[in-house]
Image (tube, one colour):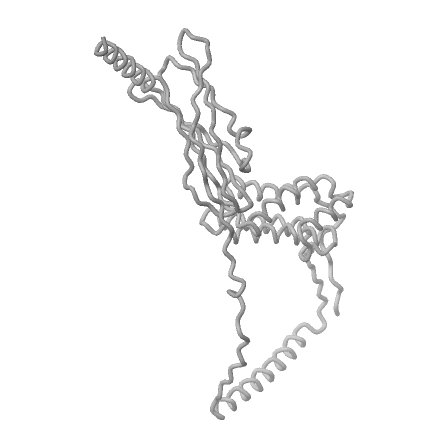
Length: 316
């Protein structure tokens, strides 16, 4: 009787394991367990299930509150040995140092000919967000004394003679050119470029450099931010180059001509400050979006004067 019971239990257990292994499995993992403040955290959620099973994708964005959601990457789906394998990736970040535990995610599913919902839970994941290591003594250097270079007297004499000859040559050249132009009327035309023309030309030049595409992300963000700040200074006549982003946005909100760009400027400077102060490593989409925002800021505040050229005085 005991042997029959043991055999029955063993067959039941093996049958249960086989059904579970062939039905569905879920797993969650991050690309690493140690990050710096502002790093991108990639969470991968993988499902493997039989064709007869229907799986509900959990709302990862709403389920994970301990991290800051950035975006959802395109999912991948393939079939392998009669099983369907789905891979979903989500990008998060965190801007404070901490030890964070990503909670279990519940994955609901239904089997064929059975409307009752079942679920599996992923294993919690613990990661560490480390502070940026800053050495306060790193940039402090002793002031070096001026370097004195002793030259032979004859080299000094040659330098003096060269300066004298250059001065005399410039004097005679000036008089020669002055006499040639004497008695002739001259009209000088000076092109005056408007602030938006200067800014758009610089943005076109920056786009052509392909800085962030070649890995020079910091240089790219520094240059695009500088162009926008210079444009604000030339267009609206306030010291945008010397102001923090928050003060620039405050000034723009009071200017009637700038009402249409306040929201775009806010998004632009938010990304710029993250890169500068939080060591934020932006996605390629963010780099491209910042250039588009810069173009939008300039184009929405263009002014068209009556005449954009200045004619100089007539000298006889």
